[in-house]
Length: 241
Image (cartoon, rainbow, N blue to C red):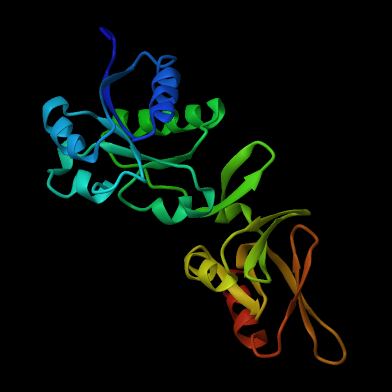
């Protein structure tokens, strides 16, 4: 395209997926598809030939990953990587510091537009845009990421977990123990064996005559705080005041 600012490489062994991405990119004239690859052997070659600004990469392609795309290149030569996956439960695990964004197939128009906005922000500024930290959930409109700073608390639900945003909740296909590693970095703390609470969401801690403690959240939710966690939890909340 004559007016295109940024070149795009689409690398996926799924023909329908490549056509879908190409079709949606047609609505954004500042992006131009400079090459398509269905074989992993072609991807690294096309990177050298076409020097794309953006790579849409199917994560099921054997022999190539986002690490392969960036490790041999200077910072100014790094393409922005958008991962394509058919499995929402694995999406966040694949979505790491080497990739700008990920899309779950089939890709919706709205979700694709959000990715384009992030690409424009990064490419226009010349700086990497930090990925939002959150959890992948399934909704009636498809898969989406809920940021940790939107979540009030997280409870264990058998082998999975459930995140609560006010009175709304979504199941996450990860155990609470796995989520805790990321959640603690985002200001969450164990309230009990079965619950993580975002400390900024706590309004107060109440106690009953028998010594039981409950975290009252800004949303109105009440989360029991176990005896073993009570002192650490109360101290952490107080430090935020």
